[in-house]
Length: 107
Image (cartoon, rainbow, N blue to C red; front, side, top):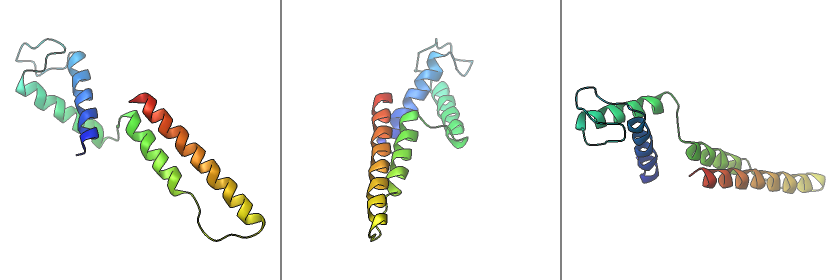
């Protein structure tokens, strides 16, 4: 697990705690993160959410930007196709830059 993913998972666990999720036997108050049983529940909840396809917005936007970058074409082109390819590649770069900017704003 990357440091960034661990950071986002920790933020999700804190959100669960703040919302009052707890093991039910410890007496922790919302926002407390001292009970090891609660921590295990938070980890399980976040793992289940990730398995269901949940990911923080910043991760989704960054992945989308990477996909957009991968769509650029570098095949040799000539004539009108060359101009079109340059235009398409610029459009792809603009989309990728916009997605990365949105990801930076959501961090």
